[in-house]
Structure formats: structure tokens, C-alpha cells
Image 1 (cartoon, rainbow over the protein chains, first blue to last red):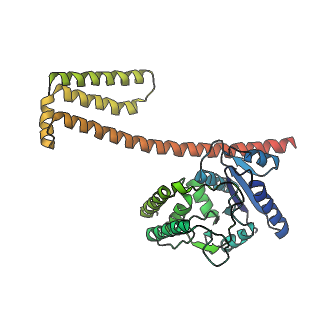
Image 2: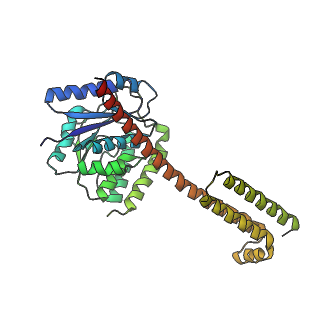
Length: 238
Length: 119
């Protein structure tokens, strides 16, 4: 039986990128005879993202109020759960993620070998993505904290390019961390004994617009994330 | 403890009590929460009515002045209340998030059904 696959695309003020992102998915589906569905979660954008979504009939959910990345992505998982999808892929609406690698990250899920796959910039030599030294250090620190809190060696801690199976969709639909969802969910899933794999993918530079991470907030962000990781690491799961 | 201090505390307790009473009667706060505050009033009244007991207690706990103990006690109560409020806010936020998500999904589904009907 063919698996139902959904791309969850959170979008906040992405009027410049969202149409291209959608078009890429449609083109890819036509070319490769895949049928990836997608759902854009418009997180209360203040620009014309909503109008574009309506105009080009892109499947979407308009959040009636801004929730932030965690709340937006969870809405996608709820939708996936509601519509009985087998696999959900988190896919950024800003053009950072490459549609050609969706296949790579869902592959390990298809035969049930893995439960959760994270697309990583730091595995293999596929990546052309350049990042600043400081950010690399930040990612290393997070990686270290994740390692001591749950024992899993995660290289690309902030990657938002992830795929999960039905069981985790249900889990996420029910409960999803609002703050720093990427590292936190990884720790939670490891603690719940899910099988997690990191695979190498290529990520592009952002097409346009601003990323949601600002330098001046980074130190505060780091302290917060590290603490959150440690606390989640201390929680007990059945 | 001086007479005037006792009077001040007494007046404060009465004002606090009347405020709570007013809010309760107007239905602005549920009894559940008002109870904590009424308990505070009781505590304050106790301090003003039997200052001697309080002086003893202050000595026992190592406070040099009764007023110091009273102040510390209030601060402790307020800190605790703030903590409780933080927990409550977090709970509220979770509920709002849930509502926003569910309503938004519902709206999207309704729109889709409407769209199919007009086709």
C-alpha cells in the first residue's frame, strides 16, 4: 500500500518564498510521479502570505493568531493525524530546504527501520551550505548538551528538516514543545526509545527575507535551550 | 510594637478585606481564589490583634524586629503567589494555543467544504 506523505510547511511572513516553495513541490511531484501532499501553516503572517495562499489555492491553514514555530508546526501534525497520514515531513517555507532530499529523509521510514529522521547539514559531504563560525560553535554546544542529557549524538541540532512516522505524528499532535522544538523533541524521542537517524542533506541559502534567529538574542537563546535540554533529560518517560 | 503600627496594619487588613469582599460580590473573582486572600487577611489581623505572640515568634525565628518578620512574611507570601500565578499563566497559554490550533484547523476544513459546494 502506498504511504500517505504530508509536508508540513510553517510560514511566517514568507510572501517572497512561499509560492516558489509550493511550485517546487508540485513540479517535483509531476517529474517523479510522487504524491507528496503539503499543508502550509500560515502563522498569522502580517504580510501578503495569506493572500498568496488563497490566490494560488495552496492548501493551507491560517492560524487565527500567531503561535510561533512550535505551535504552528504542531498544527501541521494535528492536521496530519486528523487526515491519517503515514509520514509527516517538516519542511521550511523559506526555501532553505531542498525538495530533492525529501526522498532521502523519508526512505528510512518507509521500511519501518527508523521512527524519526533528521536532515543534517553536517553528515556526509553533500552540503554546500555555509554557516558562520559562531553558529557552528553554538550548534556544537547544543550537541554536547543533548549528548549528556540523553546519550544521542546529534550533529545538526537546529535542523528543521525532519520526517516522522505515524506513531510520532500522533505523539506530536498530542504534545509538542512550544519553545525550542527542534532540540527538545529529539531528546524527548530518544528518551521514549524511538529509533532516530540523522542523514545528510543539502540546505540552500535562504531565498529572501529574514531568518527568525537574531544575533543579539543568541546568548539568551543558548542558555535557555541548554537548560531546557537538561530539564527534559531529567524527566521520566514510561 | 507601637500602637500606631498596630492601627496601620489593622486599617490595611480592613481595606484588603473590603476589596476582596467587593470583588467577590461583583463576581470578579471566584471563591476558590478569594480564599487564599482571605487567609492573608486573617494572618494580618492576627498580627495586629496579638502582637505579643508575634514578637515571641519573631524572636524564635531569629528576627530582631517584629516588623522585619512581618515584611519578610509578606514578601514570602507574595513570591509564592507569583509562582502560583506563573503556573496558571503557563496553563492558560497551553489552552489558548490549543484553541487557536483547533479553531484554525476547523476554519480551514469548513472553507474547503464550502468551496467544494460552490463548485
